[in-house]
Length: 249
Image (cartoon, rainbow, N blue to C red; front, side, top):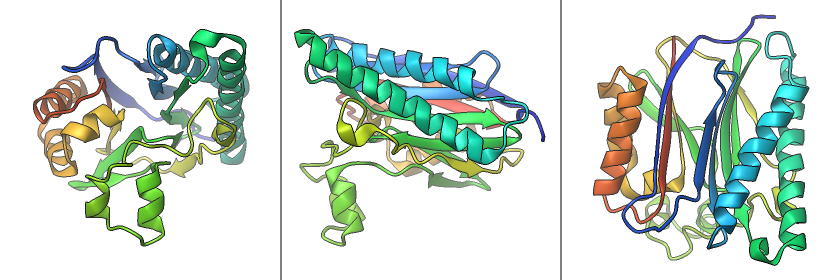
């Protein structure tokens, strides 16, 4: 099997204009074996704790359970699902034990770089996009009430953008539904592909056209991440804003 894909990356995470603390967390493995973004919820310090736990626990288990040079795709998918389920169970357990963390939860989105393939997925409404041949595509699916309404044909994708339930999730880490639902999909990397992982702080302030243009215009992934976060902030995002940009070499 092939080893890992050659990648370059950059990342920015800010508290934003309207929040007192940053409940987002992101982690990039120094050897580019995986990239994680988590967006915590639950108020006070609970959201920060949940996103931090998700990042720490998923990272630990990915390193333990995946041979990034030669694992076959089905075993990578299985390891990712088990890692996310493990994090979910631990977040639920702490929420049950400690009143400060009673209602905490977090989203997560990821790219795992193993055996020449990228595995993309997530739980909640943090997203991963790919820019290929100048076209932006959302690779993850939101686990939000509005997305469920769109899927059911009850509302249009345009109506979903301003729907009052657009930030209400039916699945995230910290709930029974959060286990086993990360849906990691193998994606064949192509040289020149540009990926972006983000919390909903990005998409609340920068629409897909803006993201596409900024990913296209900036050949340095760190600069691209900074520009996208800046655009989201200026676009009126009311949340913490986290963006990771990954270029395939």
